[in-house]
Image 1: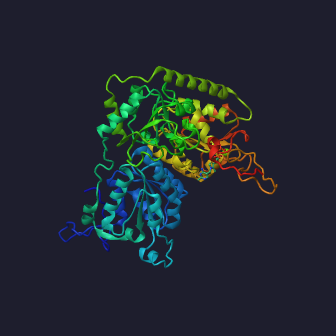
Image 2 (image 1 turned 30 degrees about the vertical axis):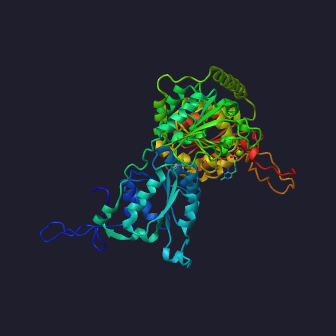
Amino acid sequence: MDHVATKPAAGTADAAPKSAAGGIDHQPQETDGFQLVIDALKLNGIDTIYGLPGIPITDLTRRAQADGIRVLSFRHEQNAGYAASIAGFLTQKPGICLTVSAPGFLNGLNALAHATVNCFPMILISGSSEREIVDLQQGDYEEMDQLAIAKPVAKAAYRVLHADDVGVGIARAIRAALSGRPGGVYLDLPAKLFAQSIDAETAKKTLIKVVDPAPAQIPAPEAVKRALDLLKSAKKPLIILGKGAAYAQADADIKALIEKSGVPYLPMSMAKGLLPDTHEQCASAARSFVLPGADVVMLIGARLNWLLSHGKGKTWGGKSAKDWGGQKFVQVDISPLEADSNVRIDAPVVGDIPSCVSALLAGMGTNWPKPPAEWLSAVAEKRNANVAKMAETLAKNPSPMNFHSALNVVRDIVKANPDAILVNEGANALDFTRSIVDMYKPRKRIDVGTWGIMGVGMGYCAAAAVTTGQQVIAIEGDSAFGFSGMEVETICRYNLPVCVVIMNNNGVYKGTDVDPTGRDPAPTVFVKGARYEKLMEAFGGVGVVAATPSELKSAMEEAIRSRKPTLINAVIDEKAGTESGRITSLNPAAAKKK
Ligand SMILES: Cc1ncc(C[n+]2csc(CCOP(=O)(O)OP(=O)(O)O)c2C)c(N)n1
Ligand SMILES: [Mg+2]
């Protein structure tokens, strides 16, 4: 059988000894923990590992590569972890991050938490030190009880002590990562496991090819009917698509549902492009009109967390921060625990999104009534007015360049290259990109996610390029870029088609703050006029400074044409940003301004 590679039993030479008769002796073949981990991953279709070598997993990376798994080696585990997490989102296969014990493990932990919070399937596999010594706290090399530390931030966490349990350990990790609401899983592999020798035939029988790792969860017909009755009764309906809807890969049915319903929809950030942002039902440009205005809202794979102001308060037309705006909600979600987390859900539809959307579509029949014309025309009017206002702003060409004039270029480039994947992080660099740059296809926009986390940039770029083969464009705040900047070496090393554009405004939010005492730079500012493009040049990529929209345009076009790793230092007016971008309201301001 091909899945379990074997090696000669200990003490035998590589070439099997010939018997006197000239035939091959049938000696028992041995395998080991290293090989079983690789075999179990391969058996389950895992073809890529994102990691960083060292004790005790160095040979695991080498042997995985030799066995045909693609091993992407990073400069910091956090970036390998973010890469694995987004690979999970893009492919519906668990992204694997491989780290060394204690410090490497801790570096990967942020990404594990990120995967869990964002519902991305990921497995953090970490080597760990000797159990007997760790548990007696005798001071082992990199001693740490990693399993206990991973548990609170993981959807599930397992440890494998014996080679004949590797198959079960990997199978459980895959099921936990993928089934139901996906998430981050921790798999602890102590050093001793890797070298354990075991009879290959026996070992082969312990491996498990996981059958149906993300089983369909069919919604109850009554729940579907309740939801459709509520939607039909609405005078001002709205649909909100979340990144769960993007993850689901039910693109054709989601589009059909939106179009058959005739209901205006809002895509959350990573759901942009499920339908083109230029779609006539897209209400993104009228967000602050449709949220308070809607009477029935159908959420598809979107949670009523802070990103949707918890479904209440002023954003939703409530009188004050905690007041209900009067909306009734339909919530389509795979987790039965999601409903009522923030406000009452009148019609929960629990199931996997493809099954729910197809059941909703079937239930709508052939003559589903369109929403009242007054609502549709009011939304259209608001949207068109805001789009026209934005077009005016984008057409300006101020000097120095600002976010709008730079992103006007990016907007055209993405329109001309709709298959490119857009990675985005920062504050202003994030918020302006999200609202200005239209997306045209599903899962083309990947960003800071639920936590608004900085540092996903270069890891996301690498994984997006590797898993899709498409051009990647990263729009990065200069602060955001700094969290993963060293990975431009990784991008150059693997020669990935990544074009990084740094919106360089000399700081966090903007570059104008000063230390009132005059001693140090202010906490929010960086070296002025920093030459980030030289970082890319240092590793053989292309570096460009772009101080005008036309320079930015030609540099991006050339990067896409050549598919060479490119870093464009887009010089932005340092006064251009606002504190915290669009979420200034969450920023507790000091009572007394200094
Ligand atoms: C891991 C992490 N650390 C810190 C923050 C706080 N934070 C939010 S945005 C941001 C950087 C904003 O600056 P930049 O990326 O340059 O974007 P700009 O607004 O200047 O365009 C920081 C540090 C965070 N979100 N995540
Ligand atoms: Mg900045």
